[in-house]
Image (cartoon, rainbow, N blue to C red; front, side):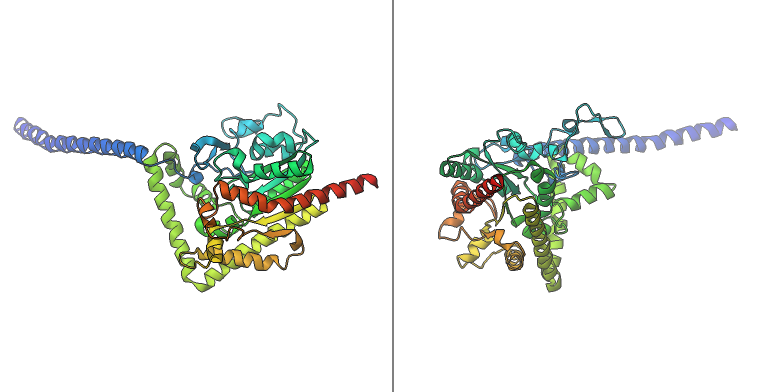
Length: 410
């Protein structure tokens, strides 16, 4: 009886195995085709899509406003990796990886936190650090416009043109040293001024900024005064999914594209909520103007305390140029209204005499073509900015020289 029952059971088991094998084979083929399609999509993505903006990959502002990644600044007409911004890694600052964390090895002595500024100053770090003291050293604070992004070559950047004009007029070499980083807002510039510029005792400081404070909080969904990628930093820290997505994005342009669209959709929805509610929009405008003017006022106060001459220039923007030319269609309401609020608040600042409104200096017919995008400008705009700043900075340096002579005489 046991023999009779065993054979049917064995036949039933084999019969049940066949559809399972078929399902496994079908699943295997589906998986194989899925992998082939993903590889094909990845290859197409790499062929069709250029390098993607780095805010998800490089966090050049954290901590101490820097990380170990590189942020490539494209210049008009130049290859994307023409300029490297950022340290090579924690090892560049004396850290070593001990497995659980990075630790500082004390292989070299540390004299000042300002020594961490080399990543900002690029090849001009030695000038700000004091080498070549026969030069007049002017530190430049700001973001990508202050760094000259948009110029076709390094010698056509506005600060390179301005230093040539000043050197020729004063008969003494003047060097403008950008302590600027794409994406910076006035809060970061204030930190840079305090920790990394004033300790080096430059002969003067000029600040060229304003656009990022007015625009980036809505462009990236950040709180006014915070780094532009702060929301993404929070997402990577608090989300269990985002770190994996960011890791994949570093290795796949297809994932980068999908992740970028996901982030952009979230930020766009937030922008629509702000614009649709008058109270939110008013809060936005008041906030960006308050944070900016508070930071600028305190920066000017610190310069005065350290007896370092300083000027602040509200940078040009395409939206303000268009409005000054009578164009109303397509203007960014956040930029235009934010700039207006900034200018109104600056008029009530204690140190308003050190502020220059350059937001509409490109308002003549045809000058809108100088803009490469909403805020960066091509070579003609770089030169025009340098020449507009020239009398202001010349007066600043002459005043500093007179003050220095008076102090040495006394």
